[in-house]
Length: 218
Image (cartoon, rainbow, N blue to C red; front, side):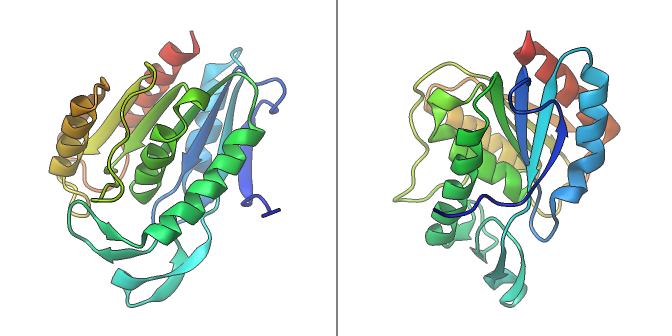
């Protein structure tokens, strides 16, 4: 059996959690990128029992970065929108995230991520709808291709997209395109664009994420 990816874990235990958020970092980063956010949100949520699981992506060669090995959920071949990717590496990481999803069996479950991690959260979540209660994406995009279309809606669950309007890496038009595609498949995503925000997160965005998670947990 393939071992689980190493993860940072915050808040309640798997058994006690009312809600678990599996939060994936961006390309070239690691789980420590969002450790402070996870700690702050689990603390702010008390007495509610929230749990954050932050997996580390495997180190793989990334074509657009001259083939250098780095933490990545999948190999990016071209920075076009939609991204041109190596779908075999997407499948491998999808299986990794599904293994974590299967372990976190208690309470409600949310998939989330930043940039490439957000794309991974959407891709995996839309293909495991019975197991999830929400998806949120920060500065991310929808992974899709001719042989990998966006799945149809199977059940109602919230999807929220957060994005800066000055993002030079993933332009905010990618967020708008993502929302439009999801709507065409009968999902009901919300999309908030932050004025002046580049490819990063802001305090306002984290507060909005917190409010959104509170609504799911009620």
